Amino acid sequence: MNKILANRFFLVGFVVLTIVFSLSLRKTRLKSEYSAQVLKQKEAGVAKLKKEVESLKKKNQSLNDEYIQEKIIRDELLMQKPGEIVFQLPPELTQPSPSPTPTPTPANINRWRSLLLR
Image 1: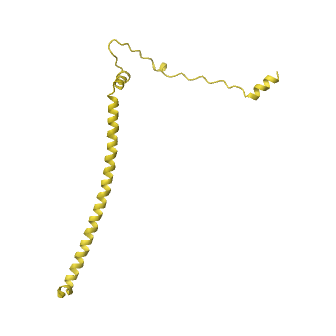
Image 2 (image 1 turned 45 degrees about the horizontal axis):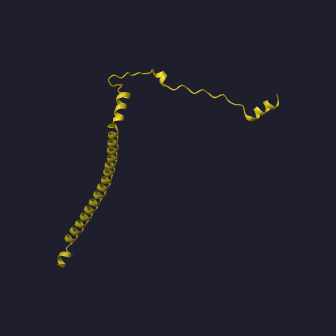
Image 3 (image 1 turned 120 degrees about the vertical axis):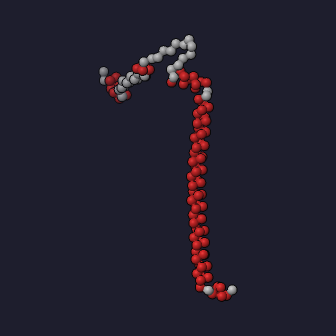
């Protein structure tokens, strides 16, 4: 046994195998860390997509409401029920008229002067 340990080729081979093994372990650790990062990113993407799916489900449920469906049919598709008469106003009549500008009232001191100095 002492002759094997004293042999230079054996010691060099043992050192080389030890270095290769440690490099392999390091490479495996780096791969696992990278995989963990990718997994976190994918989980974040999945969570985002789940939220989007939930919001689309809520939107779909709200669109299935009869009131919303009728509003879309009447307003966007411009359809009507049988026997109904639809009046469509021109765009200039549907826009609100500008509010009149208020006339500025004189300051209180000016009102007192005009009252006292008549």
